[in-house]
Length: 139
View 1 (cartoon, rainbow, N blue to C red):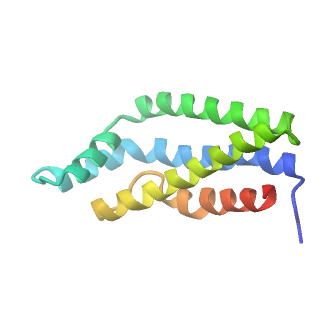
View 2: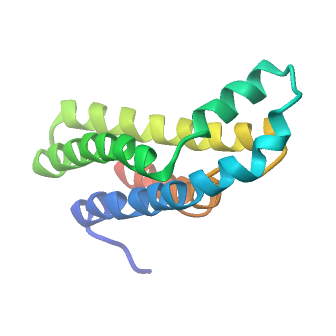
């Protein structure tokens, strides 16, 4: 069976995570225009909250994602540089747990709105399985 060296597997997480961010950036603006009708007459607080989060142009969303990517990159860099350190284990495992929670939020948003939400496909098909793989390798 093919297995990546752990430091390479950790670095690859950045690529996997960015593919997810690219799906969000590419789809967010078009999605918000196409789904506006879903919340026009709703009194559902959760639907409005979700839609307002995603009601953004791609450029603004990309600027927000740069900060997320920088934070992710710093955490990955620190983990790779200190593979045997307990504090970097805690930091990275906490980060991976937040990523899994983030992916769960994508699914919950989709269920509440009853439609695709930006980032859903890569959250389910790439990020969640790879995050679980990393957790397995690290634990």
